[in-house]
Image 1 (spheres, rainbow, N blue to C red):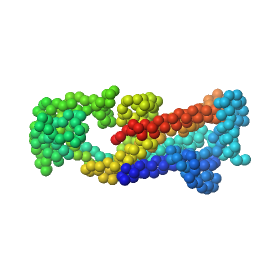
Image 2 (image 1 turned 135 degrees about the vertical axis):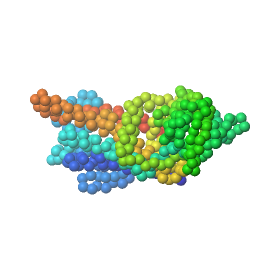
Image 3 (image 1 turned 135 degrees about the horizontal axis):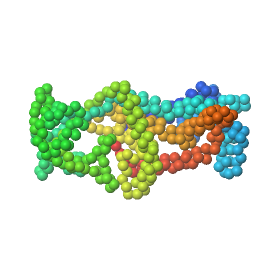
Image 4 (image 1 turned 90 degrees about the vertical axis):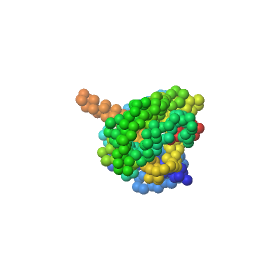
Length: 438
């Protein structure tokens, strides 16, 4: 049941994000006088619609996107010099111009989108992606300020009695041949708060772990606070093979998918976690950091798609950093909602769901800015090109050029649409047969 609730929460927030993205386009377009004939969430057969004023609002059966139809997206043939349609690509562009022109009511040519100035076009087209960024900021603020984020502390949660191999089963118990863990041998107890290690004051768990890993085989003084009293002890971390972690805290794997290890000091203790509420300043900082990380992923998207195809249809193992589609997002939501264990409550689960959906909105923001039609970034690039041509003409004292013939980009838009559809189907298949789990 919890799994289904998580999926439903993700679906509702995703649909709301799509709807608000389209609102981000629609509102400025209407403010600038453009007639908006349709506002729909979803694709495919219409489930519900209602016309209010001059706009038909509705929902369609496939909740994988949405759209607003801005009248006059493409300038008519006479406005761009009546280009001939000698090839099938030219005919596609011509058909797009004619379809766009047919939407313009008599006497309302001034309300067509193509008539807008470059700054106004940019406001309209940036409106959708910026709305996703605003949603990400709001969700991140709710998580950081409202719920707080689980943070490791220097207080011990558990103290192992023995040193188990790195590949041991999570439920494995200590055997007669397993060496004693240094922490237990030194008398450390769950609930102890480590104050200093090797004479160095420690404030965070990361500081403590670095000191422990660097002190393998060395007798090291440690001071802990126990029941309000400071207790001194001496520990000698054993040298054990332990995973190498990347900057995101994930275990590094080799080309065969095996976890990479290195010999480091091992004490055999784990930390308690507590929720810490961040300051308002940290919200934009975290969103900016995630936006940059998402941009690096999008920049390597072709290589990631190739890697996904190889692991899906080959024998490779899908990595934790693999791209996922709607099925994978639903699976993540279900797994977060069905988490179980000590200290795991619905507050923690809801925070995890909202955090994931904030990241998804950042991905929508970045992805939609790719400068290719039919994505918003393609329209933005076309508007910038049109505005640039006009500025150059003005500086050179030449006549103002007409609108850029964006209909010429329609064949490219069709090609990109087909490509994105193929990648989407690949993601759905991969998320079913070779899923990424968290």
